[in-house]
Image (cartoon, rainbow, N blue to C red; front, side):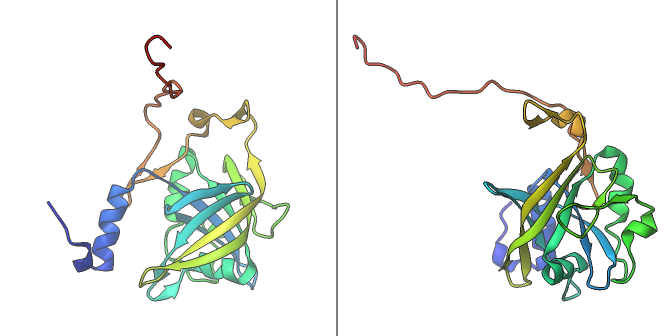
Length: 207
């Protein structure tokens, strides 16, 4: 099967891309509106883009031609928190994708507990095993829709006690939720550890 990308509608391309680029980590983002409403929404177009300083990126599209609440709040305030949800939080994470009015807080509807952040105003999700307090570094527009790539510089890490060993996250203990195509999610499943490979230079015979 071959498909000419130029002939696809935005929805058709979206369905293909979200089924191809899998599994995707999920940024469960808390923001604060200018009127003080706490917004919560999941985004699976999410990755890290720098480690010095640490930066993460979230791609936020439009909804009915209007930027989503999360994107508007980030542009208005310059702050957000990326929470990483584990398996026990799956139901709440999926429910938070519902399109609520801007003046309604998903936090309150879902009955989620929050904790105050230290360096930014949006709170973090208390039950999340990892949260990243971020300030907006840059916003880049892509595509005809367009999508906005929000790049945030991490100001502070919150990591649940016991998840870090020798400076690294124990992924099996983190037990994060991943996104597939459509309303389909996945967990880690089997974890395979491979030996580190070094490049060996073969010496000429007799050398």
